[in-house]
Image (cartoon, rainbow, N blue to C red; front, side, top):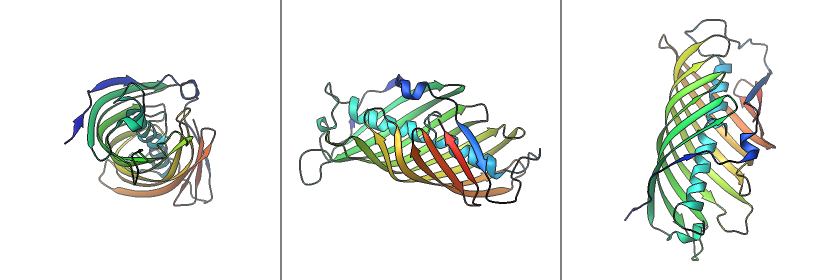
Length: 257
């Protein structure tokens, strides 16, 4: 039987480490002689636009992958008890919740409507060791370089639930499918499906910052003339609110939040 938790509406936590950060910055160090800048043609999707879409979908400031993953963590900590402990969930029982989130970081605003189901795992003992989440929702954000409206879905495994551990470890598959409007070069509208697969995303329990981990990203976009463009990249979190995105071309993008 699924146990339903009451819906709620939340703003992003008042975390000074996150709220005081600058807007996502994107700088390119090219390993190729190709010019990937937008030449003003609105019937193509450049690598830089794909990289911007990937970076924003992962960014903790956009309300999409990282923030929604953190919302799963907040659900474990808060929804079902006064003591904010994952131990208060019954192992092997399916729980459910739905709620809205909204926030602003610098000049980026976002909102999302989320529906969750999850089961806490206890392994061979009675103390929870991990939790498996399924997510479905809608997300939108508006930033200075790109904006988006999309559907999101995910399967998320969160381990290291016991108090002895200082960080959560997250492995997930996260999909974002919708429309984007890019201001990289000139205004360009397109649709895309992005899929992210994480390997050992490490999130500090003290402040919910991502300290390490790898995200493999695939991007399939359709331009206004119907042409499709495939890109892929690997994003590595390097701590101190930074990451590096390396696209399949070899071009690298330095990210900071």
